[in-house]
Image 1 (cartoon, helix red, strand yellow):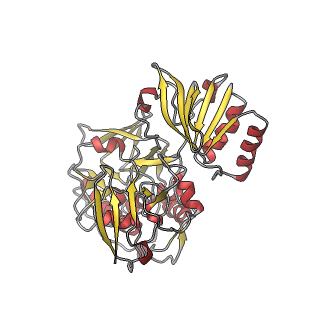
Image 2 (cartoon, chains in turn brown, yellow):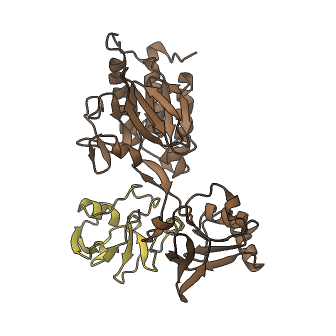
Length: 335
Length: 105
């Protein structure tokens, strides 16, 4: 069980900076993120892209900004629960919240700060009408245990690194591997692309390019995929498994069911302290909504700062909070 | 100012007046008219939520590698598929007609 002062959902830039502002007020923080690494979208989607509107940085790479934030919050020694999704919350008798992740990790805190950005990243699912019927019955979006494919026939779809890497890996495990991709070139690492082409030429895998999987058939369990080829029309292929690997996209997920007021997948807050309609739960950064909202990192930093002041008063109603500049007091971290 | 046509997912045609002097793209003009285009990534060719089909025969700038890479992660991709955020509104696009691609889950 993890106990802290402010439990932050989302380890993106806004969640990370919250640790700093909370730390100045001697509040401890713990972050939960569905991704296996901190940084949110910045690390997951665009680590090498420059950002030009962080005050004081004419240009900073998204990945660098995350590294710098991690450095900045180090004195406040935050805890992390990574690779787990915040699933449910419950208000306890002592006034604290109990938050449980999808893997069952329990967290206790008097304040929850939702800095969830666009939501949690989940695999993109092809819009094939009956795909849900075959989930875990032949269709997997994530490969957890490659051994389940031993001596089976597998169709992989996609053109990025994960599609290429798993095609190469499963070529030695599965009975037959077919990679389906919509065009003839691939966006993955060059040596993976070369390896896949080599496996295809030596007939160790099937490669169907300029094609997309458009249908699934089976009786309770997947046994066939329908592939639409650009010039050859529809192809049916018998298979035990279909693994669509089309990257990740963000979903609001379970947070949407926590009784918070929402507008278009964003959490309504006031602009006094970014509190939601539930006392003790705040929402900051891209995930919140208020009149005039701009989804900018710099706005998220401001929201985090004001939110921490309010959180302090909520946690310590009898303590007086005196405002101090870091230039005067320095950064006094936790031992 | 140019006029473009956007056909939504219910096949309804919307005629939009699009300024060409504001550095806007097709995703942004759709959002400005509150058409159901998410533009989640803000126009970096990083999410494919503005995937559309170009129906008119305007000669568009060829898709960049980034755009093609992102289309690899989209669904129902056709030869005329583009990301709306990568089509900049310019005077030579008068009469451009696009159809929004089906929304993926």
